[in-house]
Image 1 (spheres, rainbow, N blue to C red):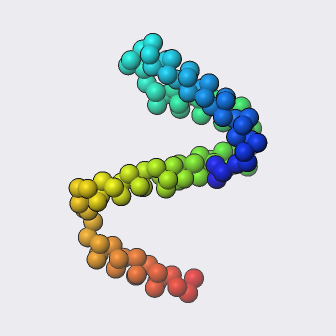
Image 2: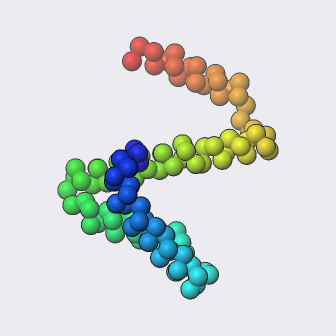
Length: 111
């Protein structure tokens, strides 16, 4: 979870703001700059510096990445998609989806 104490945020937020400014500087110097590659580089370097190369540390790093992606999806992407679904219309047959969920729940009730 990204919900850390106010004290930790006060330490980390200025560093994050500096990093964002560095990204913006790269974009202004080169409009074709690949922001995704730059972000990937920063994340990769953080992982390389913060985690050692043993199985538990690799699992910890991957778990952090997955949890971050899921939380981003839950808080940012899902509401955006829900709004688009509302605005443009759903593509899924809700009755069919509900039946699939009901079957899954009933099949796994005893597990």
